[in-house]
Image (cartoon, rainbow, N blue to C red; front, side, top):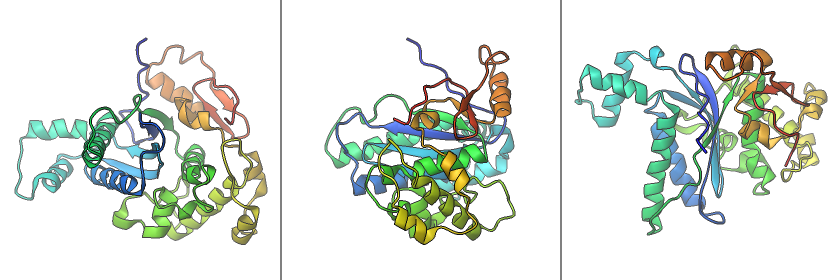
Length: 304
């Protein structure tokens, strides 16, 4: 059966939720492996024209929320600067080579390929093994900025809590919220927008607002693992935070991993038509009950 083509937008900055799982049994990624994988992601995020919005590196899989920038937004001078960053200040290459690098360094597929292959080589050498490390090809979902993005980011940051690894999401070193709070966003790895639409909000206030959102979301009962302790929520809840939004939220894993595109109905219609998807003009986006969002694919209502 042929693989379904990836849903990729080439003409605008676009956010993708990317997931990849190991082919190995159990939980082969310990603290050391997670630290190496994080360093690999950090390395390539400085080369590729992208913004890392969120991540969670788990024992047998990882999540990335990444915004890729289109080719036509990148000036030749910027490519030359990154080329010298990689190959040295005195390095020089041709115009044609720079154009090849522009195509490569704006490609989600190339970005993921380099991350996974580089980590595989390090992992195999570290464990004196050969063979495939990763399972099936990575999944990717197009995510609309704003409401859909912040919900997806919360889903990613709550992975360690749902798995019962930590009590508080920021206690997990290998997640975006943990990286923000434990390292002060070392080396400026992460974008500071947190999916919040108002660009005038200061970064510190953005982080506070996102943390409130994350905690309230994490307290809602879920069939997908553990929740945040209510006493912990009471300690951190602010009086101006609405319960009603949180009560509407239910963590539905498949919407964030298998939906193809999530966001508003108009966003899904416009992207589907832009990509020339079959039946784009007739297909009705599927409402995601309780989340005030829509999905390209019609998935079963399930929190499992």
